[in-house]
Length: 182
Image 1 (cartoon, rainbow, N blue to C red):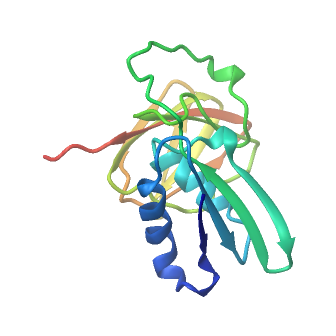
Image 2: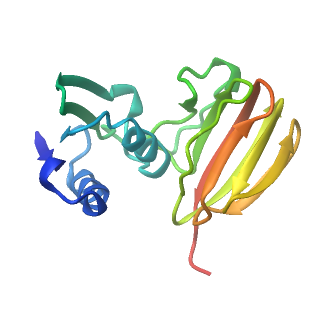
């Protein structure tokens, strides 16, 4: 088991060190993070950016007012050759649910209630396809709003800061594809 206590690491260096430690794990191993706050944003980042992360095995416990211990498991094997089907409506997890955990490209179901938003974030080194299946979502890219309605797809590069806000109860399928060299 690999454990990192990030409380004494400068915040600007934390995620890089966590990503490096996770990449160094063997399949089936778990990275334990000790943090001073709930690492839910890190969970969402790992689920969106790290293909080998197994979000179904993620666990977090609050050990004290400034101590959260989280388990980030690495998928045990590679079954990428197998064909898989997932029903978007059956995916479990709010507001994000990964259709094919640990696989590339990432396919995430985003379910938001009216006026609910996802905090501003980025998806570096990714091309993002944001397909609204139900409802309408205002997707702010670098602060500029883009209304995406049911049946429409918004495509953008992940370096742009993004903040989706539901105009009404909405469901979107978000595909995060690794960007290839141009």
